[in-house]
Length: 434
Image 1 (cartoon, rainbow, N blue to C red):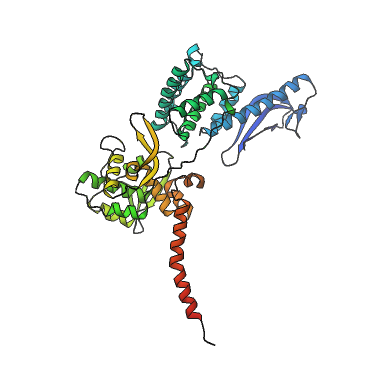
Image 2: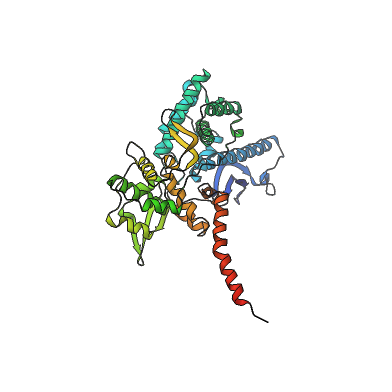
């Protein structure tokens, strides 16, 4: 939890008050508040001004308000992956004391859609979750999609929403609007979270927000439809006889994905240049686009055999002849047609629809990453899997594990079948006739 403490750090009889913002593992920042006080008027036990007169009382309450404001700003921006540094702290203090001039706000700039536009327009200059500057293209597209949904919501409500209208009632109505259109619950929560990001950004620009904005809670929804390929299914794909060069190329990408655990965009941009040799061992090195993390992956002997006749050529993930379409074709040829519950994309509704489908119809690039995590989970240390997939926490990794309780029960049965005959034989050998 972030803390803000105030100090009188000078030996002079009159000096500026210093603020210290600290959060373990995130920041430890000092800043001059530019508020001066006499040494005799400072309470070193409470780290606040004494209250011997009305002017000092006013200063004390001003500093208490500063503390609350900075903690609120920290919680808001830290949760939105904004970089917390000295520049950020300086700006937030200046905003609190109204030392910075905010833009001249026209009437239309109070609208929610206009503030989405403002965020998109300034995306190249915004801090991102990687510690750099500039939002990614997928992130920008998410905000563009949000604007489209807000316009549909406004059309049904017959109202143009302002930023200050985003309160708890708005959130409930918006979620109900998405639910009636069969959007996934996880998607509903994501869009609501994006709305809060827009409102917080608008607030930093001087736009009024609802007092209930912080009370709108975002729920992390568990994905109950984790599709992955077992070792046996991967072997079926590997042993397929494919005379079509395009399908053979797609199969290489499938096997690459199942043995590297990388996201689709990182996967299809791999080339031979990503392969390095150290101490006689071959590795794949990649810098993940989403997290910016450098990852080193051992080159599996199956992969080495697959790329003997050439590295797979680049292929778009979606599209008429994209990798996702090829994966489905290969899954069908491999006999992966068992009926399972999942979500399939409906082009007419432009969203994923829950239902019972043949497994191959649900296959796509993200399953490859899940297959890697699922098939290795429990066989090698979890931190090793996380180091390759790039997950920051075990909680995030567990969202990719597709095994059910029945899968684990079957796995335990296999262990018993292998272990019990051996123990019986050992017991017989140890018996002595008396």
